[in-house]
Picture 1 (cartoon, rainbow, N blue to C red):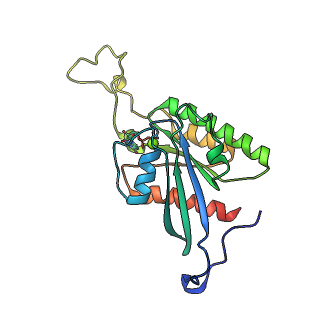
Picture 2 (tube, helix red, strand yellow):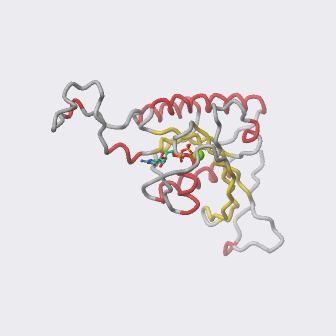
Picture 3 (spheres, rainbow, N blue to C red):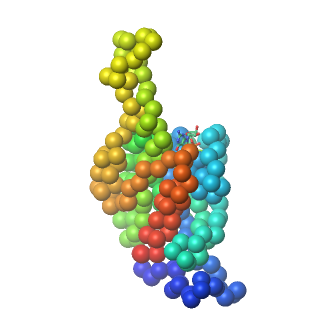
Length: 211
Ligand code: GDP
Ligand code: MG
């Protein structure tokens, strides 16, 4: 497949008539995984903690990735019940970010369904769009949740054994799932540094350029 991106120009200037190369990125995953928070962080550098879970929208941002301009379009999807009705993004996107939350195993299991649908779609159309698997909410790793099963949880003090970390999905599991589906894997946090979030969106563009 030929790249839709032109060769880099000296000085990074583009003539006024040349349309900007485009890259369409769809963000998929279960409700609550942090798709909207990641999208908003990437576009505004801000963390918005409450976002309408049913709102789906597409945004565009002119980005410079490795000194080459690109019009990056981001579809922040909001599937109500998993990837049942996925045609709208399967045919639109040139890359996919599949998001789960490291503190929620269900969201990890849910994103396997997305990876399967994507793999099936790519087999069907004999195309190959890059997929990046993202474990979001990395900041939650530092917190500890009190297990409801712990007999000492009403005590003023808590022993380490009765307060497992909030992380429910080890990084190794994310990595191994990504390997199984041939995707890149990153852990990120929408509420921490912007650079880590920007990096994964720019990596998606780089992967599309490599196609
Ligand atoms: P979506 O349904 O996948 O779009 O999820 P949202 O972006 O609406 O986020 C769901 C909830 O997770 C919200 O309460 C967010 O504030 C929270 N959230 C999203 N990203 C992060 C993150 O990186 N860290 C933490 N601690 N919370 C997050
Ligand atoms: Mg959302």
